[in-house]
Length: 417
Image (cartoon, rainbow, N blue to C red):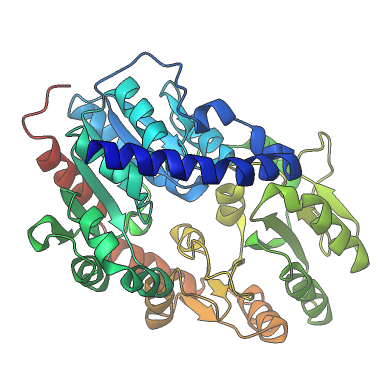
């Protein structure tokens, strides 16, 4: 079996080399952290709990788990798949080793596991990398999934090759699912029923306190009512820019904050704003004047979208007006802000249904219906019923962090920090 595994790994590596070389030639930015992708680690700390996530959103969830694990006496090491995720985790949790995740190849995974010698691996949401799972299992590292979810699309794709996934999921020792539907899907794909429980969605856990002050950003956001559009993809900013036109016609003084999902889209977003006849401002430019009604601020920095949501009167979450499946719909709601989203919600279906059923959020179908909703939300006098409904909904889900930490405590029982 060992010979077969190494032969398969060698074949996989040989097949990946030309593809990887071409990708690095076409996308030089992918060279960032290449040694870490290949399993290199400079940190010397071993025996830590290894937290692993995808990007910025998962970095925030990992940061929530960190204090509880420290209270249990366990140090933490972290990996994320994107450089922006790593940077965000370091901003949230200073002093913790954080590296780019290794490519999911048996030799690279073995190299990292041998270097870190973790007491456990904790995977966030849907970070189900087969060789990472099997590698940790082979090294007798217990594995948990926290805030586990399987979207409609992921579930259908995994089900097509269920025998492959059943073997991997059976190697996971604890799965804390977001909902009963997610729990049932994990079991249907082969996870052991006694290892799966519903712990809730960490993104629904109420905030423990106010955001730290960010005076520089506060000045730049100005004094007018704000409409904040976060995680925007190509093809969505045009619809969002229509909100300014509609608001102006309704006699509302509104400023717009546009936050791209990926920072490599900043230049194209700036050009879209100019084509719409407006002059964009960039958050990263020092000395930028405060945002005025009818103006657009492009958020080309990391880690500040939450601050903008907290100042917003209404918000829209992208990846939903085009076929991307949606992003974190709940973040604006945490700050008492009514939220809208488009019809593409495959990745965030549970959140969308919670928002609609509670009255905290609204599904729109296109740019015109988005503008109609936004004008109504921005023109609301006094406390917003949608915002109040959202805060009640969030409060009703308090406890997901405590349940997730309890699940990890049972995983780590008997382990020595």
